[in-house]
Image (cartoon, rainbow, N blue to C red):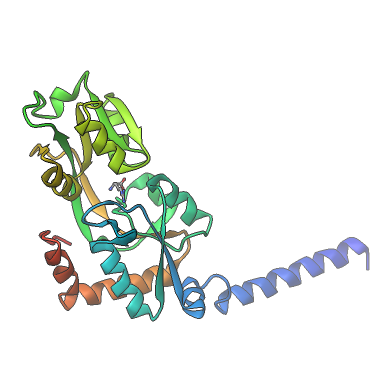
Length: 255
Ligand code: ARG
């Protein structure tokens, strides 16, 4: 037999072996992998109250509690990494984090890079201004400076609108740009707008710029993990746990 023939046979045998290994649930079984090590690594950007924020340096909030309840159902411990929002999806793609839990809006562009769980809440993009501002609707934003968080849907919707933007990796800096007068408006998701506006004496306009369905994000191909998370989420919705978590933070649950 010629060397080339031998090599071809070897390559074919290897392919069969690899396919068999994958089918047996080797590295491709994302749920098994997480359960075997007993830890689920979640990434969040804790600048998004009441979904996730810091209390004594520890991430807390509705989404943290929800993912903790899900992890419990999967029989694993949740390990939370604090990350800038725009690093979450790249970190999931590279396998650094197993789940993104950061009020992440499901959109078509992101679906190309990550897989999403079922939606657990639907928010909207809102405009926040200083009391007495002349901005009363989206139409008044033309020619004004708007603060947003880098990599968010707020940033893309404002870019599409052709507005002048100031982008900040942290949402805390985006709101600070408004309170300090560096920006004329801050565009952010509805519940976060309501929470921080109340804390800082700002005004949230009624108009919703977009609809923002939130879900958890996973590395592409994490089918078994996503299925298990969806199953846990469905059980937690059915037994009233999700509702209770939202009520604790004074948010009307709509998931
Ligand atoms: N929902 C928006 C998005 O997906 C904003 C999310 C920001 N999240 C955060 N934890 N800072 O882009």
